[in-house]
Length: 165
Image (cartoon, rainbow, N blue to C red; front, side):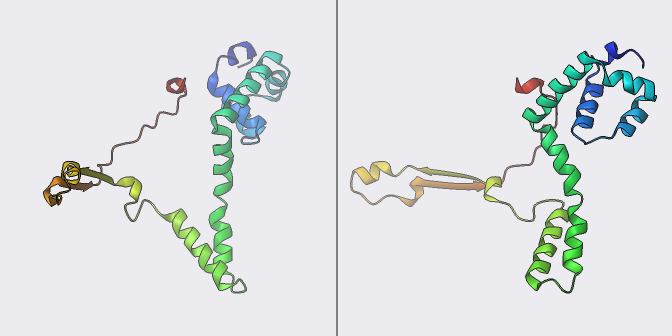
């Protein structure tokens, strides 16, 4: 891959180089993935058109939140080790140890344990307004109250930005 002009059209390559600029990938990882030698790497680093494409991709990743998410994912994987050290340290206060146990349990959880209010549908139909207008006692059968839990449907996992525009 010595022709840097054709690399400008390779979105995956541009994204990987944006990750390199963001310190999410190393130069060794990129060289290995794309089978670059040191001369090709030097040539790529001097190509102004490629640098502009990388900068544009970097800005796009910042605006879309992709850069933030990937950086957070790199850091959050350290959390279980840190929490385990706090949990296992007998010199830590009991409160800190219990909090770390709770945080570790939340990280290890594979799904919700209870249904939240967000996962519940409540339909309340009150047909007793005319009785209230006539000053009559409303009929309890004029009030319909239905609670239901919606069925889980697969989430849309398409990560492309085409549908957002």
